[in-house]
Image 1 (cartoon, rainbow, N blue to C red):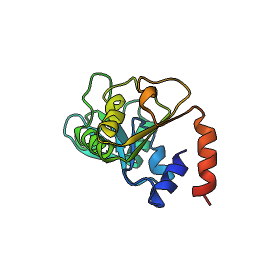
Image 2 (cartoon, one colour):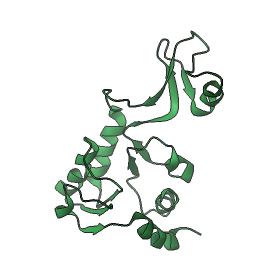
Image 3 (spheres, one colour):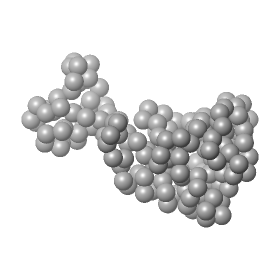
Image 4 (cartoon, one colour):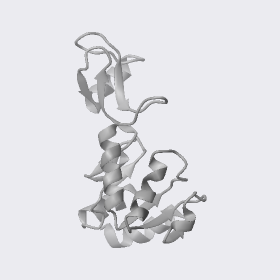
Length: 167
């Protein structure tokens, strides 16, 4: 799925980018370039004491050495720039996601029950602005009635799309 989405973006068929709640970096690894990670990303970590930033690659050896990684500068605890329970979402990513959803002619909802806010409201921005929504999920969602198309098997759909977009 991630590789097909990246190929669709490279082919100019996914102009608004990918909006994701995932924090697994799979979209980046697959080659997607315009990604709005509304729950943050582990790509960067920062020291909770002095604010020094580290990349994911810089953190890997620290995590392997320590149970909790610490800052080289001050010894403070390093935290991934992902949203933990009770924390606010990254405002830029959320704002970009709302803008992208609002401008979308077609929004694909993939593998989401649309129960977790604020991500669950993004398809409504598309619908309110005249766009269409396609939902591909194996369970119902609160907006199924508004979807242009409902499909249930993500793997099956993307195997068909892969024939058109992957070499």
